[in-house]
Length: 402
Image (tube, rainbow, N blue to C red; front, side, top):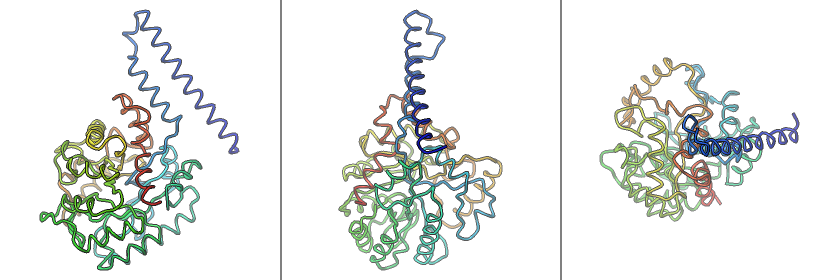
């Protein structure tokens, strides 16, 4: 089908959805007036369903502030291979189905025995080569690239680090990675590094003098400072030290679930006051001692909105788009992963082998549409939902990137 014919078919489908939604609303209103609406869905439910359909018609910009499109169903041997890139045809199709405009993808050193700098440089080069070969993906340098990917039906890839250990003792390395196209750099992972302490470090050190140098370099070279996984003191110090808005790309609210990986209201409020962004994840830390579900995500989103305002909250799933095909195999892999993370000293309180790292009722390529539906049913406006799905991250990150 040609591009023009595809566009025409899309427009017709959009009109059909709108007309169907309008017809359903009118029918339910008439039924209620005649007194036999009790056996039918409520008007509020019908309006919410129509709003969710409208989200697909609107084709909002959807940005996962921390996530991926790797196919988690590939054989484990393939996933564990050196420099493995687990993006395949299914990954790309699921990303399109999900309406994913862009995602911040973790590459480079996070933890392990390899040299942090050398590993990170190698992985940037490997991903650059992969992205050049794959026309369905577009490397993101600035906000305009995300808009272009969205308009062209492609998926923007934001290269990001989840640990700044690769800076060694030289803050000038920030410029090296900025020139290579890395657009988001997280200061710490769960443990300590030369910049300060992560969320699981008991000392809770703040930003070190070298950490301040790195934050200044990130500001100067227009790289978004990410404070996910950080301890509370380094988080507050970095917000104060930054001359640019900062982000916590994937977290939860400590007031809703009191776990170290979640952020206090003070941290959330300071990020918003700085003009920044808070992304809520789809992770085990949304609840304590049980499997979190979609309702828990909504509770964290609503709390964050109450603290930060609707212009500063979005999503950073910390997961993939494709659903899990073989749950028994997945659970075996999860048990192994949790044990390895605990043994390596990088696990976080709340990680358990019997709690999956996604929301069971909000997984797969339609999870963003389902979330839009849930938020509509809760009374959130279409404009607010679009902000949460992507526009808030786009505004914050685009302002930093220039």
